[in-house]
Amino acid sequence: MAIRSIMTSYLGNGGGEGALRMAIQMARKYDAHVTGVVWQPPNPLRSRPGSFFTREIDRILDQAETEFARERRDAFMASIADAGLQDRAEFVVLNGTKGSSIAEAARGHDAIVMGSGPGESRIGSFATRPDVVALRSGRPVVIVPPDYAAPAIVETAVVAWDGKRASVRALADAMHILGTKEKVTMLSIGADPVPGHGQDVLRLLSLHGVEADLAVRAPGPGGIGRTILQACRELGAGLLIMGAYEHSKFSEDLLGGVTRDILEHAELPVLMSH
Picture 1 (cartoon, one colour):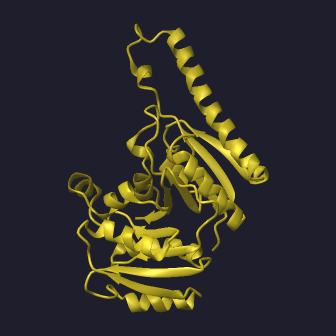
Picture 2 (cartoon, helix red, strand yellow; picture 1 turned 90 degrees about the vertical axis):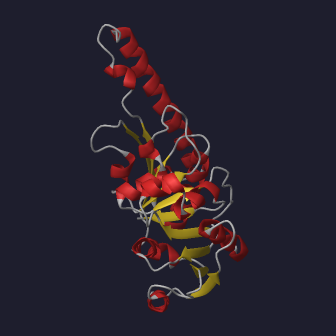
Picture 3 (cartoon, helix red, strand yellow; picture 1 turned 60 degrees about the horizontal axis):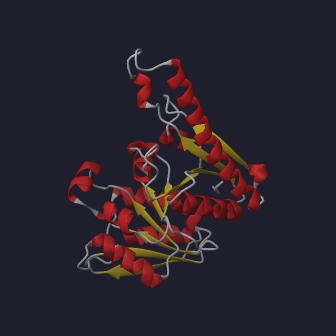
């Protein structure tokens, strides 16, 4: 199944620019439709007591929220027009009500493209983090570094494989992408060359027309996450595919882990699934 619908959470700053650039490149490659979304959670001022929250304050908030969305819509559509994709693009404002979160909206698309950089404080929220969207949506999320500026998609991919459930899910979600790549490498970290039925997976990829190489690396001093990223640099990867949060997200946020390391230090787009 090919990619036909891409959603990007467009903030117009930081990682949002890189994510939009990547979404446009993917839309061109796969002849896909692009939906830009901006999330506007309920303003906490609206929950203040009536004596404080006047009709004038309500009007000012409405005006600010409308302007916020309009600026991002205009910037998004300008980039879409420059790319010649006006006939297959739309912009949606999610207002934070039930059923309109980014994770919920993501379920109606083949792939989600989001920036990894911090957003503005107005919209900075746990629910808008790309790793959280990957956890909650059930869809693959391509997370793009803030300074991503490649003029075209780099057609090499690395699949981080440890044989566990999350890596299996990421591989399945990425099959329609892997089939279009010029070079694919299965990367294993540790002593076991191909853990978790890896030879079967290499055969499965071959049956799908994807001839993958195998690379094995010993864990480096910076941990598994840094070792994976170093291998991506050595292999010239344009995309890293990996499972997100094989252990609990709480423990990784608290103690650190592979997902967190890669989110913080990746220099290339990362497709994460959970």
